Length: 459
Image 1: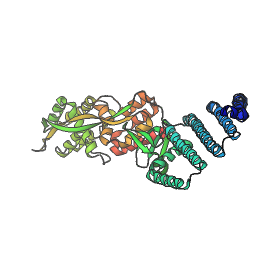
Image 2: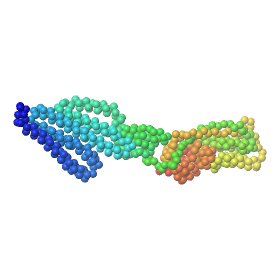
Image 3: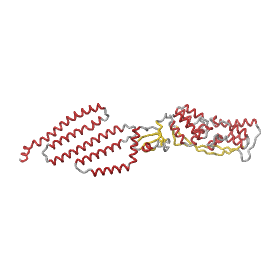
Image 4: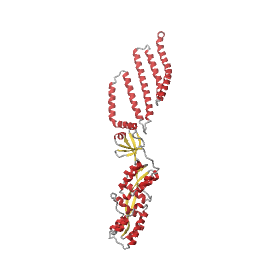
């Protein structure tokens, strides 16, 4: 009976808070529709890209916040003791802060994914940025809740400050690379596909600009990681986008040279002429070309071995001069070169039948050249790659593609000109390189001359 009497006397104080909460519930449903309809129209006028995310993320939490406000008002007008009201209001405020922080965090994550994904990088730092924003929002929410409950936050702030300082010091290189990555992306000084050269001499194409490192593909097709800070702080030459791609890449080869005695020797011009008829082409090639490597720093190079032997061992300076004046560049095969040498000697013997004999120990020993061709790791897909690789390869690689490919492999032209013409359609450049007389240069001078011609074309 006591409880019934109490309810009959105090029913208004119980019903009013419930009615207030129900009123907030109904108004929240109606008010949310009106508020978000207006907000949608306003955002559509602003044409903000994130308007759909804002509406989608805050629509349900807005209803929850209205319910929390309804519970708070109902609590304040209830007959509960003040200490219970204070406790309830703190609990409700904590729930509101948690809900608000969660909503802000969710919205921030969606906006970050949308905007950072538009950055011109192969691997935008989405996950890193989201984690940083999460930490900031959670820490701020915890600090607000602690302060709201009246707990001291100064020690916590000091602890967080020390923790952040230690983390920054420990990861200063990583942070520097991250900020450098943002700077590279924001300033648009380098893009994926650009050909760059670092101050360390490393050069290649940018494959990916990450949030810490930049991936480069070097000319030997290796992949290296370059810290972003080095790209910002160091000297970098950016040659820009790739040039026209070749239909087939150019693979650089090199060769190992060995010489072998054939057992053939001559003491007179007649014997030399007879042996030349049956001597292998590799022997003729050796005696007309080995000086290019052995005396590569002399210009002009010494004459061929036949001319030198005739002048030195036989003392015939006239024939020596005739053989030395043969322009090897005019011949595209070993057989035609051999025929020319034999014709010069034969014609000379017809006009001067008396022969000299080489002193003992001064005979002409035929030596043949044996080459072992080996691939290098270098491949060129365009003129820029080609010229940079040409700076790196050994003179033996240059020698193979200019001399051996033309005569020994009977391609009738050097490999460079063939590739320029067939795979790049660079006919003018191919003709210029083909017209260069390689016998008039040292190998290094020949290299620099070819590089100059290509660089003129690139510019």
